[in-house]
Length: 498
Image 1 (cartoon, rainbow, N blue to C red):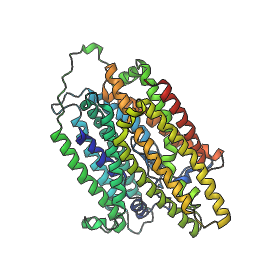
Image 2: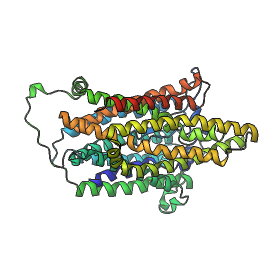
Image 3: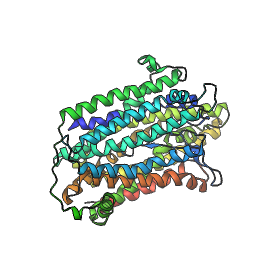
Image 4: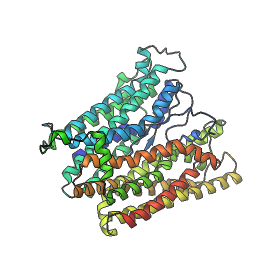
């Protein structure tokens, strides 16, 4: 059962790529200076100013990773900005629907897991070789902006997002098929391997000589920093191939034989999706509502956590003078350390979810309590920010935070690993239980639940900048809204979930 869960390690490792290498690759493509990943506060601009920043949000189940890259072509901007939530809404329910009904001799889930793994490999090669492919198709080394390379780069991330949905949905459904009534333990291991993937990804990025493992990665179009980035994808491809082949070889997926249906009463896919909402029972509706509120709470912090460290905690500015830029970069590096700590706590908490849930009287109570923890932590970002501001007023603009302020901020990252582990586990476990009790397919049910994640993602991505501008800018307005949503989701989880 745990081998399929290990697939998540390779998938998340592919997405937890070294941020420094990512930024250096962005520079290699000729993209103008922009904050490193998850520090995209520059998106807060008045409505009259068009956005020149594009985002790709990854891991709707995991931790969510913001990868900003500033694109020079309007079509590429729109393409990259919108593809993640759209693919999440379309791909995972579609894959879930057809995996529930797959009659392949290899089983219901194996073909989709294999297809998703292949897509991840293709995406990794496209992203890693973006600079080389751009040169082959017409980009010149002396060009400041390498448009063709940027196209390959954006296309690779779009394929990676589709691959993520193609792979994760069947993996979750397969684990539910294998769980035999033990869905909570299965989801805990799934969440644990997500944390392992994050830790491996962040650790790999700290090794500056990674390209020496794959010396062929350095080319005329790809310098040492680009080669390090490319080498990360090669490592992830090797890991993904190993766990995928192991999973498909050792864990058998029985062939599904459907009951004979009357051809005249067959329902098209989208008709069945709509029908699933129409006949959805109250417990599933309540689960969707709590999940949506929960992710409205999570997304502002997951998207802007390192930017909060760079701007509010360290007082830096990515577009300011050299001193402010240095402070900002120090804050982002500290935020990356916080993410590493967060992933470690998430991993350990994942292993203790089942025991903790039993001690607390059930999954819904555990989920409700950790949502209150999430609300408190998001509220505490305001307090940490105020202390950091007060310190700069007395010590000087370029003083940076004290050790106590820095420790408080990193503590928030660590504590948030606890509710994040539950968020990655309990909702999907409850969806599996509810779908089993109602006779619905695991794949379709998990795909429908995924809509409760991607729709809040779209709302936050499109509305966060405008909302923050109403309250003077900065990250805190979004965090406060997240705290309120987390508190409401905690109350609803305890009060109405079965």
